Length: 405
Image 1 (cartoon, rainbow, N blue to C red):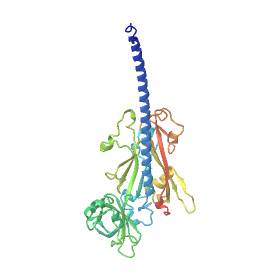
Image 2 (image 1 turned 90 degrees about the vertical axis):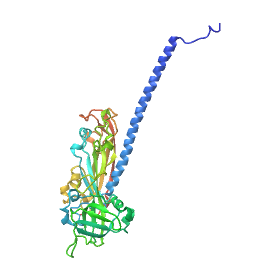
Image 3 (image 1 turned 90 degrees about the horizontal axis):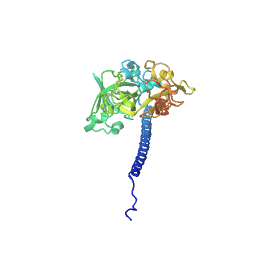
Image 4 (image 1 turned 30 degrees about the vertical axis):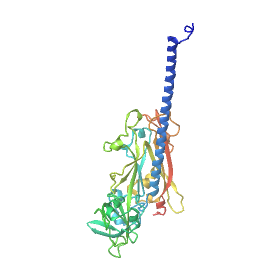
């Protein structure tokens, strides 16, 4: 009797329970999947924001140092030995603290062109690898100019120079292809191109034969070096920030980032920093990835146009007039009059995760107000859209505050 009264589940009850459990498990799995995808999206946006902040701070620091131990405008600078500038190679002949020009059309991505974006690139000149002047104990010219440095100067101590590691120590700063600024005992300035360095007891910097170095042989010459220990030298770096693709077979370290497909990797562009030589060619090994998924980089200027006149803001054609015309460096509105640079950098999220745009931030509002970009390769008003983080700052150029010529 007791055994007969024991109650068990029927097959129908077991089937109903199993089906209900499956529905519950499927719902939980779907919710977890969506929550995980949302968390990953937010993490990507946060990563892009953090990286853009770090990259933008690097850009700000480089802009703020522009013109340091260099020249705001090599064509109009009264300290320059002017009869030599016509012999300078391309990039050295237009040396200036700030040079801004549009990114070449062939370098733009479809997302830039579709969204009506016209990013710029900026070239900055100054002494970036060292803050020191180096004492030139002797400068000789017999073929290639040779600068012999004093081992007891503060600059040599700061780079940790020793005769045993001299070539390596000098090579940290005085790299081939960079410009060497020479300041003579009369305050005259001229530039040469570094060819090689040598260490040992008599550390030397060998320059290329062209451009030549001018020597002052008599009292009638007002510009030139005497070459007997009263001259100073320092390196001048030429730095370029550019928005470009790193998806190149010659750059295997970067090409792995580009996966293609629906994640929009094939159209991505990055903010890249690299150093140029005096002829305008990139120096090998100097290319750095500063910020991923960059879509816009732009600038406006604050310039001084006369005594007692307040600073004026220059945009568009004004930027080109003051900082973008290499043939107009000798005009009255040159880069030496720039007192501050307003810069903005826009980076997008890794993938498109919005189906609608915003009133601000489309083609008509491109610039510091950019908030979203369309990922449709043919239509800026069609989705999906990727979120954009835009950073901006006004950076003073303290190194040329007194340049009024």
